Image (cartoon, rainbow, N blue to C red; front, side, top):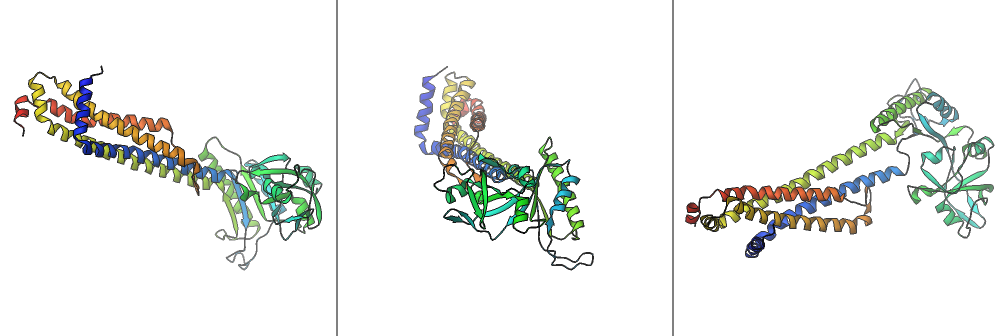
Length: 414
């Protein structure tokens, strides 16, 4: 039941002790504020890590080579390891059960790119049809390369939105237009967009068989890229990826006569890397929770101490109330109301301010590995409710002590 007299007492007490009440409320509000901000940036860190991996498939495996650094089987170090079509074909056959998508890559260098009177400098890669899935490319118009393009050595090209905008400014629909690569016409069959942004859109793609044939690539391959079939759980997928990369690297080291501990052949698994980052973000989130909760506990301790001081200051008043017939629970209720009121107002103030700050600033935060820090409102609200309950408990024990004071002892208190 609403008791106006009790609320007047609470407000009178607060007015008489403005600084004390303000500092108590500030400690509680700052605890909630710090917790929400930390949780928000913990989520922003997770968003940023997830965004980094969105550029490519998270179950991707990438193979590259460089020069040997160690002697092996009588062969001197310094040999340049060169992948070829047979390595790619054997990998597809040997690990067919594990592979989802696959593509070899041939990099075309030193090529002039022209569209009518316009020219530009972009990366050119010869790839297979599956490369669209591996790179998470979205077709804006047209299509990606297909198996017919590879079989017939078609002179076709897929360009990005960025290349279309920069090289073909006045062309509304670039499909069926022709680009000249070193003076040779290539028909544009598709325009793609990449989740990784314009940094990933600085390349155009042609069939790898065409690239090898036209640009004297013979059967050479610069890189090989795969995605692994996903398992039921993330940990099982990581284990399958580790097994695949281990077997693939062992095969390539054997066929190219490379020492097991040589870095000449590299096999990178995005899934293993993702697990490391996700574990890191989970640990950071747990640390943020720990710091935030410790801050709230400090605020609750402050409330408890203030309630003890309030009880001490009002000992004579409590004694008079009890002498006039006040019940113990009315004494407890009086002190609890003040504790809950201060805690609730401070907690909700900290919540509103922190949530508002994240709402305004969060969408504009775009730095490395941190993106749009936010916090689940229900979680934040639950923390405030728990804070109010803790505030009530913090006020209960001083209130219980006050209710047990004998009137004669209270009236003797100086």
